[in-house]
Image (cartoon, rainbow, N blue to C red; front, side):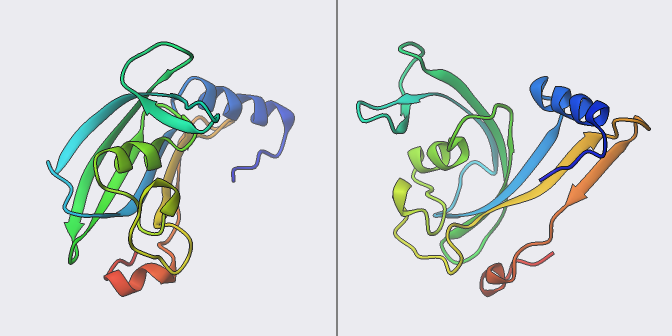
Length: 156
């Protein structure tokens, strides 16, 4: 959650999100060994016949492009820790794109995870970089990893 102190600052921050200049980074623990170490996923996300988000094979029927870049940080006993930078902001995008490739986020039963996770799903909003709406300097906001990740040797 990002707050602005004035309506003018709020408009400027909103514009940064709208024009996709905000840098967002997530960490996820996913099933299996993610290969290659770094890559870009490009898919088309639409809705299935019941209105749920799903990946479609091609554009059309209301599908929107979903793009993300990831980097595998380490492998921990059948679980990969990956850093993800979404380039678009589609609903359930990260969850869908990883699960489609056989790497469901731990605890994400909705998208096929076979492993439980103590605190819901193992997806963490790690870093947000915005331009200060008045000073025009970069502001880096970084959230510490939740304690529930410690059992996998992840901290920081």
